[in-house]
Image (cartoon, rainbow over all chains, first blue to last red; front, side):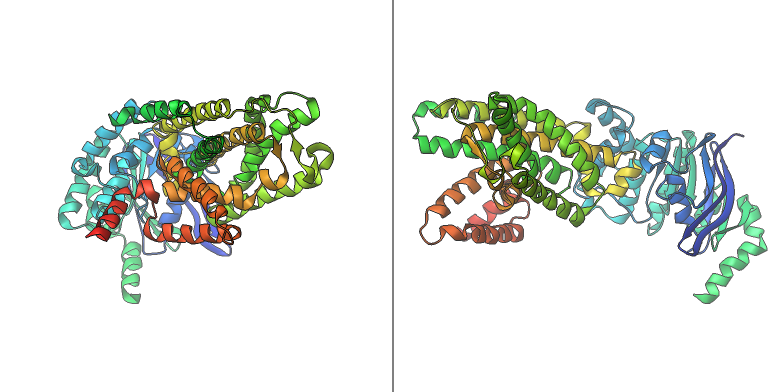
Amino acid sequence: MVNLLEVKKVSMFFGGLAAISDVSFEIRKGEILGLIGPNGAGKTTMFNVVNGFFNPTKGEVFFKGKKISGLKPHQICKLGVARTFQVVKPLQRMSVLDNVIASAFLRVKSRAEADEIAAETIKFTGLDDDKDVISKGLPLGKRKKLEMARALATQPEMLLLDESFAGLNPAELDESIGIIRKIKERGITIMIIEHHMKVIMAISDRIVVLSYGQKLAEGTPKQIGNNPLVVEAYLGEAESA
Amino acid sequence: MKKYFPLIALALLAILPLVGLSTYMMHIIILVVMWSIIGMAWNLLGGYCGQVSFGHAAYFGVGAYTAGILYSKLGASPWWGVPLSIIVVALFAFVLGYVVLRLRGPFFALATLASGEVMRVTTENWGDFTGGTLGILVQQRTWVEKTWYYYIILLIAALTFFLVKKLIESKLGYYFVAIREDQDAAESLGINTTLYKTVALCISGILTGIAGAFYTNYMGYIDPHVAFALHDISIITIMIVMVGGVATYWGPFVGAVIMVLLAEWVRSIPGLGAAHQTLFGILLIVIIIFLPNGIVGDYKKLKRLVGLGRT
């Protein structure tokens, strides 16, 4: 398999604090990679590095063999990496449809083409009934879906999903898992941050575990589930909580 | 029907001079149309793109002085200032934008406010080039009558209206609104926020500058206090859009009608005229509390409020 994204010896310091230190991993084309770890492990920081919000203090990130660390987020998005946010950021005073149209314009110039992509994406994510709702008024479950729809409308090759399942009820959870599987069928590579262990174990092809900014383990869900280091990291957190 | 409303409005405005209005009335109407252009220009940047500028006098003044200096230094007709101001203001807005657009929210607002004042002080002190505080007087006016001035500014306003409408319904419009709603989200959706904010600023500045160049031709006299006025241009521009309706097509026009008439009326009241800025401040507070989306944006709410008052 080909590596789509390579994270090489990345460190991210904020002042004296190392949010990520010397982490390396690859994502293969077409797979779902789960990124897990206790709170404050550096998962979202890793997303911000890959997505271009942060320029890593040390190390480099490659996408399709091209160095992307140091580029601006909009340039990285144009190359084919889209993301969602843990704290959802819909364009509040725009309707759901307009939100998606705005991102669809990344690949096309005319309104008609953007409308077409947006309509298709909205159908795909099951937001058809809500497309005229102003996004400010959407419940959380649908906002999470809107985040996904917006990212998909940029027609990415790789999707970074930051806790797209947090706060969903069981019915919404099943629906979202279905959507993610469908995204994978389309050939889009996914990196996902998630706290729902059941979900992450079920959908990931491989998992990378971060703890205190360092890579603790990497492997298939089964290997990770049996790894004593991982169990300790999570139980340790449970004790202190 | 609604689709043709702008054209109907334009047709009605076009036959207005045939009614035989007084010179004073024509003057007021010309001012209304000119202010609606500036309002539309500000709305593009402040209303749609969310970058609230407190310094649109800078662009108005640069446009006005482009026409004025062309006349005073080169002896050319100040009308050439109208097309020339497009280039001059575009360059000016681009350079200024490079500095101020790095700032967000209140910092951007303060930087724009300062930019207007810096331009005023510079113009005052650069007497050799700008005529300093004496200003520039255009000796021969093109027409004594107001009619042609009216048609020229009406044409500019109509073009501005259709340009803004076209832009807002295109990719640019979606990108502007996306930037207004969340810059980080916009950036991660592939929108080059710095580039599109600069585009919004340049277009907005150019349109304001054209109005400024027209002003020089129409009034025949400019000085730094008039052309770069903080209260009478920068703040009034914001009020026009706030009163009329932020991010609406007709808001700037409605706002311009109200603000120009109000200004004329208040100034004519003996003993109260000098306090007109105080009254405008109070009006702005009332609007922000009760009609945060302006008269056009909160039209339904306004109708309900008035309706309740009757029962």
